[in-house]
Length: 426
Image 1 (spheres, rainbow, N blue to C red):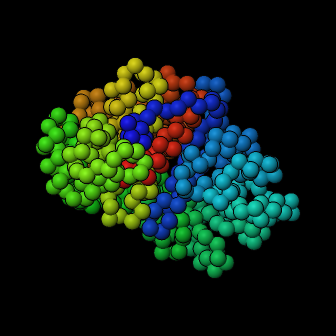
Image 2 (cartoon, one colour):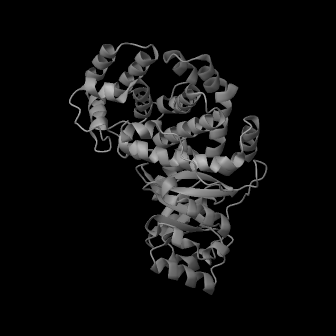
Image 3 (cartoon, helix red, strand yellow):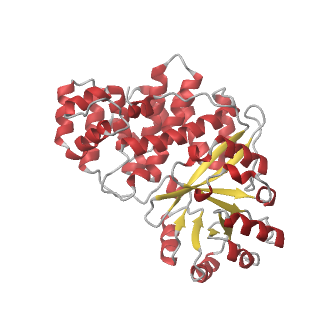
């Protein structure tokens, strides 16, 4: 099996137990390409009964997360990590990739002499800092000399204050981050004002693409998925791939990459299809559907990363709960990928399941969030909403009889896999 195929097929490796949960939210640049992730770590007791809440990440939780390996959770992106004074004054930062770490100072931290001295020392070792601009803003002026980013929370900062502050802060050379952007109007306003980076659930499940039409390559991908589902012969599949140049080139690039390790170069579409196999071809098509070659930054787009991470997490959960049933894990992956197709195409999910023939279990999961796969999907969605839906997360864990302490391991494994598979397969 090739390295790329292993990425598409590998089961999670056993990892040490950790008593925390990990959530991440994309931070995008002005082109909506991925710049980084804000990471939040939620501690739990044994089992899924207790969660820590609040922005402040304790030193012990960050220590555990850092030991687990931040590069595994963020890939090549930048990590924004909330730190309180205890964490700031601790010695945990040796675990972190400083060139890709922004320490986000929470609002409870007072910029006294000790704090500023500590930040200055860490900055000399390559760390960068972010601080929040509040409606009062008295502390921000003392932070400005030692921070690189200023974050503005659109849910707490009055619009008139934000419109006044943003131009003045830009003149200081600081990069501005708009947090909790919830709709298109807010995004456009922040873009016009001059914000550099954006985050919010609006971008994790974007509606910017509303009104777009399917590209020819996407239409062909759907045709190929239907052929595979209906068990068409290889010759028919090959003809469809050859008909769409973009897909054919992507397929050849996938199997000719040095990561494949096939021992010889693949010279034809037929050889590539044989090497990849039906199961992996279907999985690659599901991923390719979310990435258009002519879209800038497509390989790190938030929707693509969200879809692949969600699908992989659901697959790992299914593997853990029903290890003897490989087809269950495959179905879980498909449900995860298809669950964002309505966002991708801006058409109702009911129309999508009419176009793509799926089994009843997949249909009910996508339309009603019911059944085993529906419960997996609800759990994955509640994790993505970070701290807003903890009750839903707890209910999902309980309904699936899943041990909460295992969830963090699978989350990190899904993040890591998503980063690698997008890098190699698209």
